[in-house]
Length: 133
Image 1 (tube, rainbow, N blue to C red):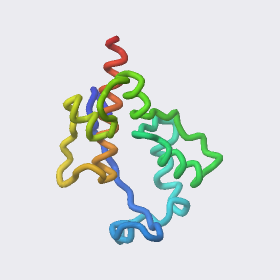
Image 2 (tube, rainbow, N blue to C red):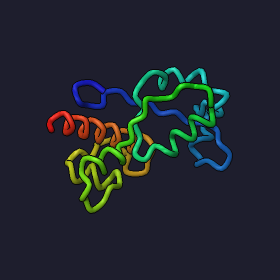
Image 3 (cartoon, rainbow, N blue to C red):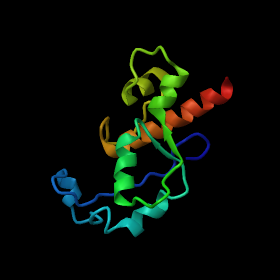
């Protein structure tokens, strides 16, 4: 992120039993554990953002329990704290309400990359709102 915009995105596929077919493409990195040295440096020492962080935090913690992941930012908790009376708090609803729906070519809601970009934009929006009050 730079200047309030998402400027660099990366997407990795892993071999996971029962995963969608794309995870078994030739460019899959292998399992989370076997490819740890490839992807983990991108996540270490940086702010990790997710909308309801439980899933992401659990996956990373189970993959590498001794790794100091975080700091974590949960956009769901931030939104509820900042705007306690909204009618809905899903990632899509919040981005729509705040006019920050991302445009990622060929992608839409519930696609991992799309949701990651939406979550980053929501975090930046909520951060700017918190600074303004």
